[in-house]
Amino acid sequence: PNPPIIFSGPPGIVPNPPSIFPSPPQAIPTPTGYIPSPSGPVLSPPYYELSPPTVVVSPPYNVPSPFGFNPSPPEFLPPIVYPPPTVLPPPNRAPTTALWCVAKPSVPGPIMQEAMNYACASGADCDSIQPSGPCFQPDTIFAHASYAFNSYWQKTKIAGGTCEFGGTAMLVTVDPSEFLH
Image (cartoon, rainbow, N blue to C red; front, side):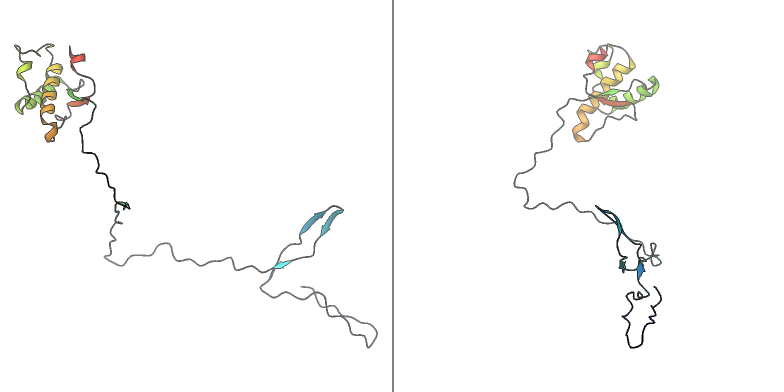
């Protein structure tokens, strides 16, 4: 703020009140603005604008939980559909892609033999891979185990049987008779 203007003139003449008044203490002056005009630059009079304080108090980031308090995870519920569907969902059906359970080619022979013995003892049709059986050829542990694994799996998959055999088997979409003969 500027100091007041002191007028010393002839006695009896009352001076005009000062044209600049001091700002309130909380006012923050802004710099003089520049407004271009067609005739050249003209400085505009200074404008003073009050602004709210810039410090905002927020709650602390980490509030300790009471001793022994252990919050449970949020409960997630399925979405609610309005109105309820009027058409029944289709029944569960087996996949339309044909699958076969075969031996993994990377499994060593003795381990595959043990897994094949388990399949044969658990219900697989192993008569067909005996020397007199129609599926004996090719006479390899891989071919015989693949036949036994698939026989067992086809018979038990509906009841929950798996194609695992201790990690020695896998499901394929190509008919094994095409690559075993």
